[in-house]
Amino acid sequence: MIKKVSELLQKLIIAENEALKKQNIKHAPTIGDMYEGLTQNVLDKALPVNSPLDVTSGFIVDNDGNMSGELDCLIVSSEGQKIPYTTKRKYATDDVVAVIQVKKNLYSADIKDGYENLLSVMKFKPARLRSAILFRDAFQSITRRPLPERYEVNSLPFEIQMLYHALFVEMVAPVRIILGYNGFKSHAGFRQSFVNYLSDQSDSQQPKKGYGPTSFPSLIVCGQYSLVKCNGMPFIGPIEQDNFWPFYCSTSSNPIELMLQVIWTKLVYDSKLEPSVFEDDVWRQSVARFLSAKCVQHHNGQQGWEFRVTNVTDEYLKDSENLKLWEPVFLDHSQFVIMNRLCAEGQLSLLEPDLDSFISNHGYSLESFVESLNTVGLAARYGNDLVLLTQNCVCVILPDGRFAAGENAAGQLTRWMNIYLADRNAQKLPPPLFY
Image (cartoon, rainbow, N blue to C red; front, side, top):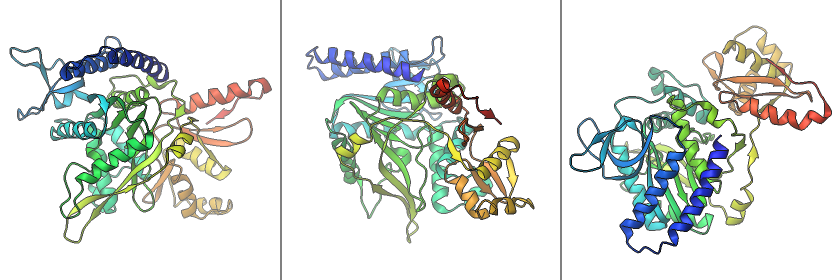
């Protein structure tokens, strides 16, 4: 569904954007109202019929009565509270699913304005938690570690502790999007403009608050180009060996599909939307690495995020635009046997008497075997046990004799198998065996 809906809405946006350009209106507030109205209209079409969700503009208010400035576009799950003698409403933080800052044009000054407007949203703390399952899945997919119990967090390496807290903030905060209908003509130019903005905020002597990864918008759209946060909700930036987290990437994929991905993911995990909305989502978004971050602790006790920029050319970005079909992980026989047990039992003791000999007979040490499953995001060591990192892993033997395993919580593996088998129908080979 997501592919069909996003393609339809993208065509609508392109047509309506061209129509608005031809209005020849010079009054800035009216121009803003037109594009905000267009955004609300498009997002309203992206929500289920008879849904308790609504698309509107208004204000956010917390339990202490503090109120935000007026926000262009909100997706909310309540009617809110009417502000006397106006048509405007205010909404509790817990009832705000997403905040979208709308710009007709998105250039350097607009990036600054949109970022700082959305930054103000982070001051409003929710009174309740959102989906703990979303937090677990995000943490495990990025760190390749099982989610620790709360009492275990302080025993984690410092960088992982800070990432744990950062992802917790991402889980409870609403989705934050800057939507620019027009702007930079160059993918690389858009990236560089954002780097320039961040550089203007940096001060090596006194780090400026509000510019850690959690403060970055979930998505920034500039015409056909976008910057997307890889916080596991749903886009994933696995942490690297030096503990840098590639948390911000850029892409020229359909921006409306990206918007639906980040909004619908929150709604599915909050049980406000059925997982079936992703039933035609069989392609991996093609993204280019942009910003990586690692939390560091200085000798004076100060903590801050160190950033690393990956510079690429427009030629490289153009070459990386092709979509790739999602695939499961392909395994050797020993990996398949162990993964099959994990899928059936949930965990496996690494102290089992016969395990070490079984693994060594296939050319692994215990450490290298665990690492082979960990690097592909399937399993991890937790004390003396091997545990799954997936939510609903499925193992399969393919007709060509290969072994595979993959996440099937949203039907990913099932969809891939349908495509795979359709390609082999002419050969009339037997179907795979599921375990």
